[in-house]
Image (cartoon, rainbow, N blue to C red):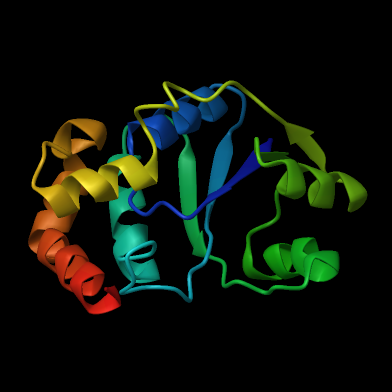
Length: 169
């Protein structure tokens, strides 16, 4: 059995993440989704809580064909021990997936196999783009799985994002 690990902030989980998760699911038997910056919420860059992101990911990945675990990973700000921190918060995994150069380096230095793959329509599917559309009242739902849009609606996430942006300016 092979278990993969994929980390992101998922603010929110969008179709680009989902395409990557589906690609990874074709290579592994189980997948750990690390929710990065889990200690951050209620800001313009990180509007959603770790629990809300767990809900988004859990609902959006029910049909990908592999067991998934959504695990919150708080920021550590000590890169030399970051992989140990991730391992302590996560189920065991065999391979990590990332396109972030720092994350790739940290896993490789820790002896973890890292696989990279092309990002799916990165110019369109980006968390900042989703949040910007939400803030401006533009169509953002087309950029996220339906389960994510439903979760954001249930928590009044668009109103929250607009309010935290207003409080930041």
